[in-house]
Amino acid sequence: MLLNEALASSANYDYFVFLQGATYPLRSAGYIQRFLENNRELEFMNLVKMPAPGYPLFKINQLRYPSDKPIRRFAARALAKVGLAQRDYRKHLKGLEAYSGHACWALSRGACLYIEEFRRSNPHVVEYFRNTFVPEESFFQTILGNSPFRPRIRKNLVYADWSRSLGQHPAMINDEHVSFFEAQEKVWVEDEWGSGEMLFARKFSDDRPDLLERIDQMILRKEALLQAPRSDF
Image: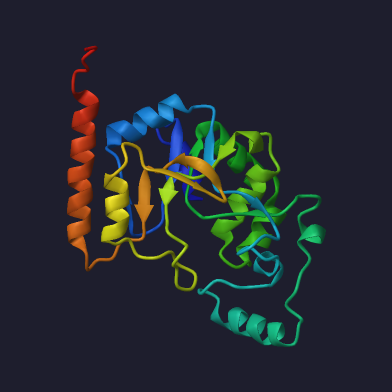
């Protein structure tokens, strides 16, 4: 597992950040590091108990196989059409409540060590989620949602506009979004996941490199303001 490899690194990282494709930072690397240092007691992960809007139980109850098993995937689809690909997570997860949320997160070393120890001690849970729909949106969430780390969880650090999304992906970042980022000293969002600062944003189109250039300039301006001497007069 990639997380285990990261934990084994000699760098001995304090936080681990998982991001999806087409994600870009909204602050400098130094700012992000200071933010995490100042919030050492918190975990950043969108978390909701299933079922919830956008997270129905069929996402974990319906048997699905990954793309590298085409024959099994075809068989599962055929069984699903006649209602024979359904499972009950409660029978397989042995008392765990089901949680879900967006895939991106930033977790402390302690939380990641907990996930790894849980994974090793509960292979049946790993195997169950291996054959679910988008397991990265429920595997880590279910483990931490049933753990002592749950009270420390806050909304994740990635801005995504789902208000005008098409299908299963957030809206592409456009000029209006970047103007929203530029207008704030800290990019702050309040939504159904809670209230918090956004350090990254997704989803960016390859056709709009100009937006990335604007964000780079924004980061430089904000960093310069942080370093400028303050006057008491």
